[in-house]
Image 1: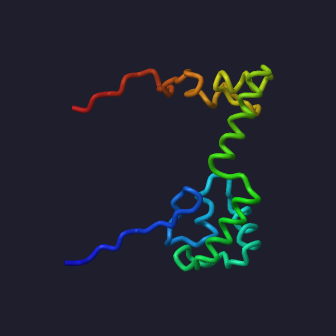
Image 2: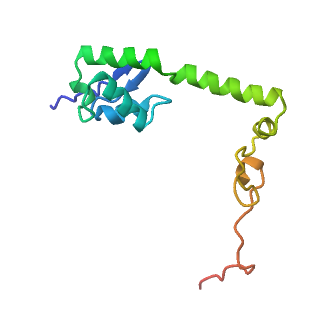
Image 3: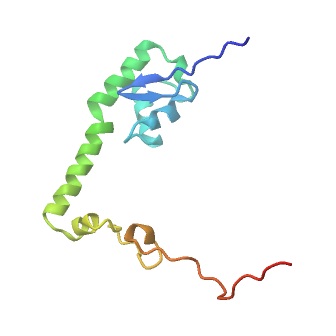
Length: 136
């Protein structure tokens, strides 16, 4: 009987980060941290981006947590700020706020062909107009 290893994930600021991935990719599981910011954070903490998450020592993990918590807004705090900004746009009834309220694209995208599903204007694809011939 084979023993199965459980995939243990590192808990980092309330988010599970996979152990098998390189730390430069694993940090991008945090909302608000992309690849470029992950490199900046790792450079500040003097950690090699090629290290796997499971290879990090507790001192390195603490250094990462300290840098991220003190300098960057991520996860819940960032989501809250974005939500407040959208609510402010809606309350001032700016053009962008009205687009958000109606759930339409707010950055100038075309809506004639795109974003039909969000507008509720779903059309079936156009056929030839003839019914398909039955095979005998």
